[in-house]
Length: 316
Image: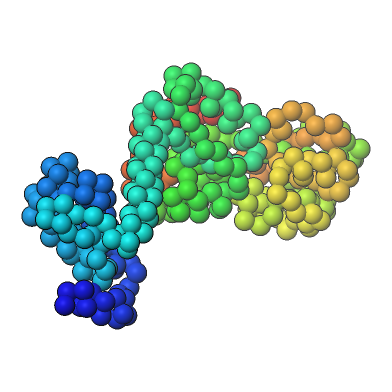
């Protein structure tokens, strides 16, 4: 009669998959323990739960699944064919849970944990390697997952939980983020080496109103800053090319395809001249951002403290 009831249940429509997962998950370790020992009393001792609790859990598991997982032989049990099939998947699932638990514990380890850190492309040549080198002098075994991207993309990764911290510009202002200004980076007007302005050392941005500009694509912080500075200087830049990386823009300038507002290069670039912009004030703020209310692991807390200690000297 009991087997017929279970068969009838098995033939009825199943409940929502998520609801079934919530029902089954707490009992999987119990099932694996009973299957391993083939003895409810011994499994209860190993799992440190009352035998009655374990027996009820197994009965309820079979009821929820609608199949017999065990054949009972007095105090001992043996797996049915359905039970053996189920055990294979349960052991795989439990092993994956153990692996995941080990991984998150390892990532949070104060000595050997991991920091997911994002930064702008323009900071990848010198600034970030220098920061990591200085930080690892005191934390040599902490690991990093590094992501280079433009500002808005990194903010989205913060919100998605894919990054712990990011260096970005402009410094974001959003209620779900915490941001701290770390430093400021002056921008220069970069012109081809044979350009009439190349003999100048300083320039007002308004003097470049008739020039063709090469810029980063919309969505990049530096593009927004470029547009804002040109607007402040009284003109709208005429855009010839849009790119995704500052050094590519320098190459376009060197090829005579336009001028650009860019941060200083990591290394001098032939074929261009870099002019100090005297008006308006051409600079971008660099800041560190993280998700409001997001708990820090010890490695993340240590690196955040290190970055904040570099205020005013981040780009030195």
